[in-house]
Length: 168
Image (cartoon, helix red, strand yellow):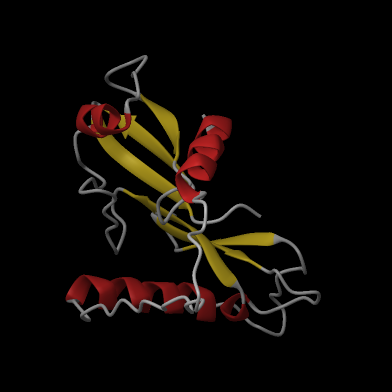
């Protein structure tokens, strides 16, 4: 799937440039989000997780990933240190989010969230469930804002969603 997605992305992104007398500069598009209560809750939880570590003791090694979870492991963040030196978690890039049942924040991907019907999500992405009640599956989608999503389900309902934003 990953190779097929890469090939599809290459086919969709390559276009033969049209001859131009005056080359145009690429436009930068900015998206502004209204500060909804849910965005504020997620921002607060992310800040709490990243800033709760003792930055003198807790460093993410250069070139590595590190994950941080809340007390009941219902919400977690993975950060990537792409620098040449060890860095505090707050100075790293957020590369993944884990949300499960009971999380203090909710994450919705294409309208699907924890507690939703797994069959509907599987249908949307063309996944054939081996067991309609319990299990997990992985979806790769390099054309979206996330690269990989792992969905865990129990009794036909989404129990946990793990989203990876970048490959490291």
